[in-house]
Image (cartoon, rainbow, N blue to C red):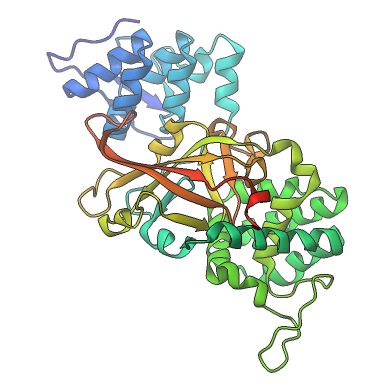
Length: 404
């Protein structure tokens, strides 16, 4: 498969099986030329740097005389890393080359075939607010608390949530989610509400929390709503009562918690013993598009306490992929590097997620982190000619020490 020279204008056509028109290959930019060449020779580094700088027309352009796209060529040559990057970037799977074959039909080994059967979360549109792995300014303001003694509050909150699983039957907790919390989710698409109900039934039937994990990671509408609900009360959830008298809480931890479904959900994911095998410590990545004022609040030595779940990835590429670089003057891109020290503070949910390639690690609510370093103007690894701010955060030590 020879790469076409684009010094002279050429027009090549191929059909998209999902569309009635043909694609024309037009004179490309030097950036696009470099990208096409990198796809041909398996230059993964260059592909990573350039892939988000191309518009869709360039990404899906025909680049050789056989009518092949970059995806066709990478698949034909067995370049798994490049195929994965192209599929993540939503390269068209349906374009036919001149012999009437899609890129998937060019796959000659199982590894490449499996990539086509995997799920890939769509990258955010430029008009959307936030994404699964990227926080926006509003999220930072409401989902993080800053306390001098955040680590003590963290331990108290975690202990409080743990009692629910010890003293209240698991099925009763799920029923509270079904009957009280889910009906309140009026902003979540009805089709996914039905999916949520099915997950709840599975959790009850098997007495297993994994369906709750699957529900969280599958649909951003739901995870965003759950996290927003967790952020409303923060640590004050402990003072909510189903039987308040004169404004004073009379709640007992052996009762079924009322009207705090988001915290029931969190309690199950944080404490259920069947999730023990998925707990891990280590380094993970998450992006933020926030204001300069927000960035300045991350002062070295300051301590923050998460109010909600944080979706992070073991792979820096995933976090950078969802960052926006289109409005850097107003909301500059930030990469957060979290170092989790206590295995109970995060869940490696890769094998439970619909989107396995994201290598998602879920940092649980009420985890305390210290800001240990802030680096300005760092060159982005996966975005050509772009810079970002890198903030390093380390967990505040083992929870056994936090009650001192």
